[in-house]
Amino acid sequence: MNPKEFEREMRKFEHGSEDRVPPDTYIVARLDIKSGHTLTAELLCEKPFDHRFHDVLVATARQIMVSGEFRPSYAYMQSDEVSILFHKDMDHYGRRVQKLVSLLAAKASANASILMEVPVQFDCRLVLLPTLDRVVDYFSWRQADASRNCLNSWAYWTLRKVHDMGGTKATKQLLKANREHKHKILFENNIIYNSIPTWQRLGSGLLWKSEGSVDRKGDPVIRRKCVHEDKLVAREAYRKFLMDYIVRYEDGCSL
Ligand SMILES: Nc1nc2c(ncn2[C@@H]2O[C@H](COP(=O)(O)OP(=O)(O)OP(=O)(O)O)[C@@H](O)[C@H]2O)c(=O)[nH]1
Ligand SMILES: [Mg+2]
Image (cartoon, rainbow, N blue to C red; front, side, top):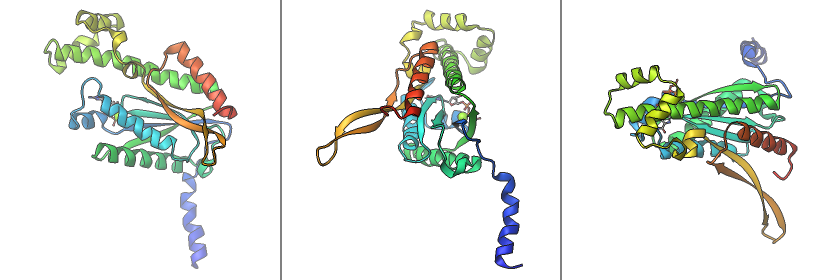
């Protein structure tokens, strides 16, 4: 077989892996640290939340936002995960799923490993959303997950730390507890839920903001800046904020 024929022959075996995201579909990449539980224990992270760990997650997402690739429009961080929304018309790598997933996981893992000075592995999945409403649903869902996780973790670690309870007993006690009961545990231990930092209760975001500036010649220019929003609003207000932001971003208006 000549080299060209051999090339064609072997390429056939790659065809099954050529899936592409259809046009007019929003793509969110969710990157999640593999064994984040073990990693945070090894790094002696504060429990239930460690500001330095969250900062690294934000810095990892920021490096993807500002890399100039993939047209990212918004990133959301909570726990050990980052969700990144891309512009609807993003066409990098022909929207090939394997390329996007592998490159994003590689970028995030490399960036976080350098920042944390230990090997960090992210897995990555693409979430394909047909409408803007569904995009907003997606981020609302991740925010609700952050809220649930925050209340559970604070209740758990309050029982562990303040009541000197073992892990099994604390887990068992919380198994039967509803939301109100978990809030009561915090309240009785002088922890005001609403005073817990917003990034712990609701996660945090990275978004583009434009600002007026001047170039080297002194001429006015509009520059885009990637801004960390760590005081996100919740529920309906978050939905409205996101909807407005994404519509403005997609239109390219002032961004
Ligand atoms: N101490 C501490 N742990 C954190 C913090 N943020 C996230 N984590 C840990 O990261 C875990 C993330 O949950 P998962 O992603 O479901 O669990 P995982 O161990 O990463 O498992 P896989 O993702 O399935 O590999 C949490 O259960 C916590 O143990 C933090 O700020 N402080
Ligand atoms: Mg994880």
